[in-house]
Amino acid sequence: MLNLIVNDQPCQYQNSVNLSKLLEDMKLSGRGGIAIAVNDVVIPKANWENYVLNDKDAVILITATQGG
Image 1 (cartoon, rainbow, N blue to C red):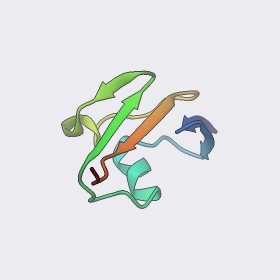
Image 2 (cartoon, rainbow, N blue to C red):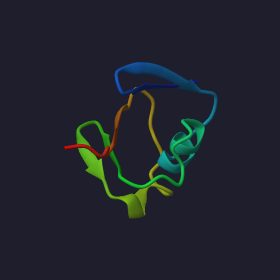
Image 3 (spheres, rainbow, N blue to C red):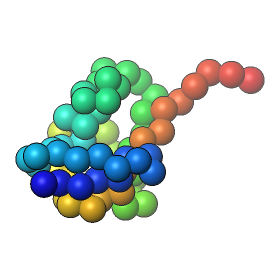
């Protein structure tokens, strides 16, 4: 069992998961303006497909919004 913290909320997976799959599961896949940090380290978008999360990783997902 893989236990993660995603935006301060517990999240569990039965098997390993990469950042792209996490975004897909959260219905954020394909959207622009997203930044991801794992354990306080920003992960470049080019690495999302290959970045496999580990048990107890803390993930922060930030989405840009319009406004003024």
